[in-house]
Image (cartoon, rainbow, N blue to C red):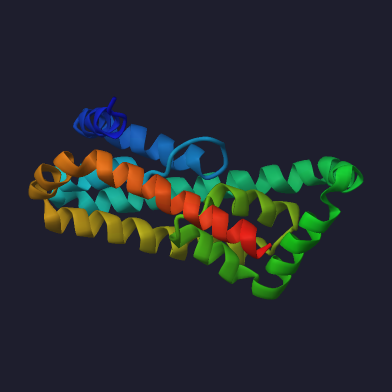
Length: 195
């Protein structure tokens, strides 16, 4: 049974829809603070490949919507932590909260910048930044830089590769998808082993 090829075909269909930029903006917004939305790259990449002339616009739209979503995640963390923080500590998450506070205390804005650029779940960092009351302006600037760098690289690479990338990716989509799952599982296993 194939899993990734049908998903790929559906995303490619969405990327050609006349409202695709709206869908991309919505996905980018919600992915930044709501689980379990997929990263916007899954829509941005085929849209940039299908329409290379609009790659800059699509990357900018994705970046702005993602950062607005990040601000909403920050606000959610900031508002909810007042209520949830003491309860989380009481039920045994004091060490995890201390670890997050330590990371943000040590690395500060770099944590958000790295999370914005990397495949790490950006939403967890937006909510945590708000919960820990990270300075707002550095949070927004780090989000803009991290998310912008990521989405512009994806869009520009796919615009350069163009439609030929789609032809070459489609036959290998199952292998690429399962390899991605394997890499993610290995990364989680290594992380848990190092804890």
